[in-house]
Image 1: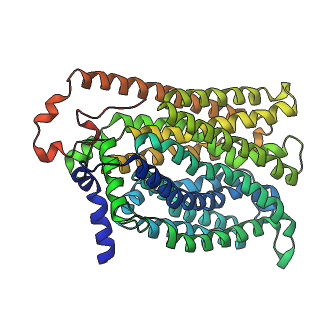
Image 2 (image 1 turned 90 degrees about the vertical axis):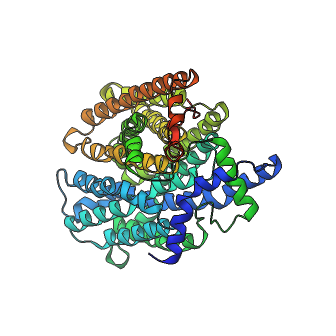
Image 3 (image 1 turned 45 degrees about the vertical axis):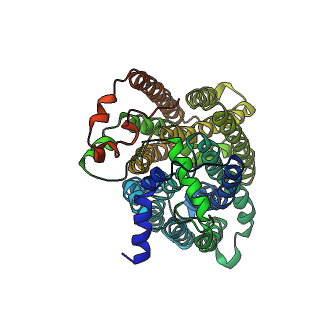
Length: 488
């Protein structure tokens, strides 16, 4: 490990210890507002741009499909579904290890390398001449993207207080929603290049989007912030203020050392597993809409080009809803009710699609709005809600990776429930999607019940026995510290 990387690891591991030391720091409200705005400008836009690129490279296969991908590569039956779920094999397996690797290096290095690698492999998808070549590319993209989203979420959470997070995380996720609209718009424009240099339109979709991703990743290497302790855009005073804010937000909730006791507290935390079930439940629908919306739209009787265009307003509406709810969620300092609202909205959309033979085309198109808005409203809130209720460096980082890793198993489900033989009704796809939405509902209810019960126990002094532990163990409790209070 280089001296620079070792220094980065050391700074990261001791971030909370430093935060503890600067608690007496007096925070000027006006300076704090300026600091938060400065962080917003330097951190969120570049991460949003990188996510936009990564997500477009992940889902543009749906746009390529209706432009002739399957015919040119000799794909038949469930080959398209296979190409989708092979991405998730490596994506799921490497999510936790990649997020742990992030702590040992600079975010600017690993995040830009991930996205740059995705761009190169996406170009490869555009020049492959076989189904097996496409599958290999999908596996590689899954491997490369594994640590990206949990790494970004974790990096954002190290700069903001708990009830500042929802707006920033939703802004971040809005990039992936807009990726659906952007991908459709680009596919509509690029499809007209069919025949240039002897390449079909679907090949140009992969090639041009891959090239753009690669050059954006090079730019990102130079502008992506590292950890607060070493961020070049912050002055020494501003770094101290960031650390003081974090310490003030979650006093005593530190977890700087990884040992057997730490592992037990992390992997034995019911909240993390309930958070994973929430994410699993709702993201099944998110992936379904990303991969199959263009296909569903063509089966409403529209041409492939019109289907590309008609997918755009769906994602724009979802973006507006998601950002609006983010503001309300942070303002009211509440997550649970908004998760239920999103799930109920999605449920109504699925009910309409399950009744496909009995409803007009316009109603089915509106149902896609309800489903897409509902799932994207819910997804980022499940991530932030869990993060809000995890205390400590390792607890928050590993917990987020576990949630996203298990939750992304939904990609395998979503890839295999919309079967060509069931078109256009897709009873299995809509029925399974609805069932998973209610898994999210039940997990959210259990999560809410558990944190309320635990807060009551702590208010009554039921966890004060932990204060008798040794200083070393007491300073490594994370959110198990008796002073930590969970938020709904």
